[in-house]
Every structure is written in structure tokens, then in C-alpha cells.
Length: 418
Image 1 (cartoon, rainbow, N blue to C red):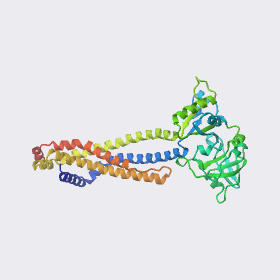
Image 2 (image 1 turned 180 degrees about the vertical axis):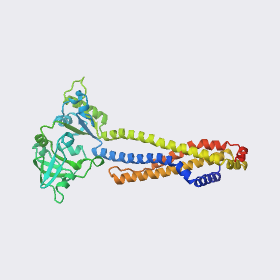
Image 3 (image 1 turned 90 degrees about the vertical axis):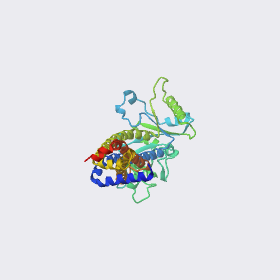
Image 4 (image 1 turned 90 degrees about the horizontal axis):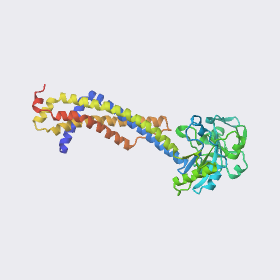
């Protein structure tokens, strides 16, 4: 088929669809729904993937955590053997750094927060902030966890840790609430009934999806935290490895060192968890995997319904235009010309539905991003191109049988058709 013949067939297909606007619009509705669901979900997930990846990078690509329990689990629902694991000790980080050549820095920290059943209150004059996160940390803490970056003042020093100094570094939200119009550095605040001097303010850093983050933390020396919170036994550790050290080898070395530190027998299982900083990505991928499957099922149903509608409308079109087919064949049109004409009609119809679906998906992504800034939904060219490909494929697949049926009609029978 020449380019001129293809163009002529395309023009005929487009004119036919325009002549039946209402019927064509209802037919492509299923395609629009299917493509819109694919595009909008993909836009939201792609934006969230970038958001999660940024958070992982802020944690530090070489940062690892050591905890008693697996991350994201409820200890009360775990086997007794895991619930009864020994607590991590205050001195474990120093021992780990001493025993592991791969470890560049290590630190222990403890947290007092509402989700552990503890309450915190910070006051300055008449201003008061509740539900803050109070954490005891050592000087290497901000080196191991880069997202805690000091914007004003300084962080805890070895002198503060050695003397259990009553000093604190505040998150931006706490600082702004207590000191809306004055410089917070050097001011004395009351934290859980104790007097602390503000020595630093962290750079603004909100949590995941607008939840609690660095902005809501008050960090004080671990020795001071231990002194005023003797009832809190639950601690965790963080460490970083050298850049040129293979991660797998470093993890093996750390695991063996922790087993020695905790005096585990060779036949005993580990009573601790080593978690990499990409645990957010892993958890997120598990969640989005289920979402993608669900969306795929919904989209497939929409596309199937739309495809069946296309097939139905094309069969009706073949029946309505039987005499026209006969005339075209009588004056020299080949079966391939008839087949291409009807395939073009089906594909044009589904492509129009696909383009509308892409537009609707982009609008959904824009609305999500505008109303929920913490979900940076964005439409990529990849998914837009995939939407076009899917809609064209549906047209070709479901339009082939009606097109082939039209191409096989006997011209003599067609000319007698009333």
C-alpha cells in the first residue's frame, strides 16, 4: 500500500468516526477509563518512588542500623524467642568500631516518644510544644545520619557527652513554635521538667509524607538522656562503612563482631537485626507491587470492556456499510485495502481514547500534587508513550476480526445487500 492510499484510508476512517460522534464517544469510554487508571497510578507511584529515593539518600547510602527487632514489626506479635532478646548496650557502638575494620563510624541512640507510650513536653516562657521526639545521641550521630544537619549553632560535643551536659539541639518546628521572633541559641528551655540550654537548630527536614521528621526532634547527649530516663532500655545503633569496602563483606564482619559482643554461642541464632538504609525502598517496593497488580487488573478490565465495545461497533459498521464495501471492491479495491481501512478506524478510535486517557491521567496527577504536596505525582514521557502503545494495540487486536470479516465479503453479495 502506498503512502497516498494509506492517507486516503485514514481520511475515510476519520470521516466515518466523525459521522457517528455519539456512538464513537460511548465506545471509547472503556479505553479512556483503562488508560486513565494506568497513567494516573503510574504518575503517583513514579513521583513517590523519587520521593522515597530522596529520603533514602538523606539517610546515607553507607548507613546501617542495628536493632533488637526487625524493622516495622510489632514485638508483641513475635515469637517469645525474639521478644526476649537482650537489649543493646550503651557501649556496643564503641566496641563495634574497635573490632571492625570496615566500620568508619558507629553510634548508639535511644528515643523517648509517644509511639513508645511516653509523653514529652518542651516549654519556654508561655510557649509550649507537646508530642516531640526526644532522642539521646552521641557526637558521631550527625556524621552517621546526614539528614540531621545543624543549620544554626552546633551539635553535641565529646565534652557534652562526657559530662552529661544539659544541652539540646532542636528541630525547626520546635524552634519556630518556642521562639517565633527571637534567636533561640543560648536560651534555656524546660524539657520534661529539666532545664536545658539550646545549642543548635537543625535544618528544616520534614518526615515521610508530611509526618514527623527531623523538625520534631530534640536531641540531647546520650549520657544525659540515660541519666534522666533510666527506665528506657530500648536502644539502637547506627554505623557507616568505608566507601571502598564491599558492603557484603562489611556486613559479615559486623555480624561476627556483634555476635562476639553479645557473647552468642556458635550454634545460636543472631539476637539482633542489621538493617541497610534502603529498607524504605524495599518496604515501599513491596507495597507498590501490590498496588501495581491491583491497578493492572482494574485497567485490564476497562481495556477489555473498551476493546469489546470497539469490536462490537466495528461489526455493526461492517454490516451498515456492506454495500459500500461491495462498490469499493467492484471498482478495484483489494481485500487488504478494506482490511486496512477498518483497522485504521478501530485504531483511530482507540488512539483517541488513549490520548484522552493520558490527558485525564495527567490532570489527576496534577490534582494529587496540588492538593497533597508530599505526594509529588508526575507524568513521564515513558508512561504517556506506553498509554499510546496500549490503546493502539487494543484497536489492532479487537479490530482485526471485523476488518478481516469485511475484507472477505463477496463483492457480488455486497452489491445485492439492502
